[in-house]
Length: 246
Image 1 (cartoon, rainbow, N blue to C red):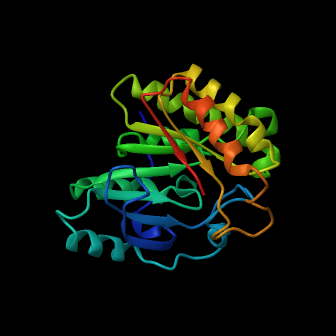
Image 2 (cartoon, helix red, strand yellow):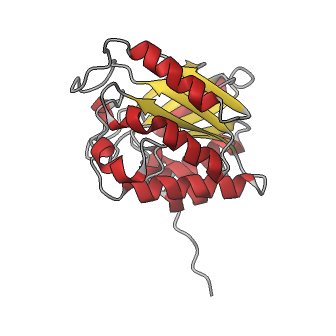
């Protein structure tokens, strides 16, 4: 006899912040954005560096999200769960299910750290933004965690497999920093992502806002370097490619 899966209620979700209206967190959609507390990675360009500590309790109760949705029915397309790393907390699955039950769409930003939990979320989400940060051999330098590469690329496989069976739309994103392996790897990362079967991709310049300030996002000729990088990546042939300058 199969044991019922444990459900951690949405009320347990540690929420660091809630943005009631965003036009940038899900391309083409107006959404509310839920920032989930905590992340196991330590990427120096993370724009939400203040919410990475998993021991910090949530600042926004789940009831505030439900109240917002009750007031914004017909005005919002959906809710995006981001972080931190949204999939770090099991309670996000119940939170997603509740948002769907209220008739809203669900988006997810993830670094792919938890591929099994990503699989569990597929029945609730309509769109995923997946960060693939570097080539596998360089991942530890970027995120500060040795086994993150395996998890992230496995999460890409999960999304590609699901897409072949009516699963959620997804975008793969790579963020680049001058003088860093992220920039060295970006074109090859895009090639491998394309070869794996993904068809929507974004190249993003790192920004300094909200980071720990431990790196420099400005360098001589950097904008031109990124533009040339974007041209090479776009030439791979995507259904949709987006270049996001700083």
